[in-house]
Image (cartoon, rainbow, N blue to C red; front, side, top):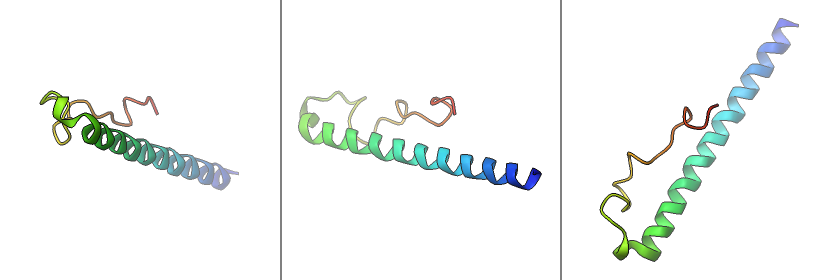
Length: 63
């Protein structure tokens, strides 16, 4: 039974990581599309490449 639980935990961790990777990819796509559409109107803090302080981590997602 312990072996089965370990498989469940590994699978859960894998899918959480995949979800986090998807979140980060969608976050980047959103910022790129916003930059393309509104780039010349964006402030220096929100321009692509200068949003490191606004990016969320898995800790922010409460995983």
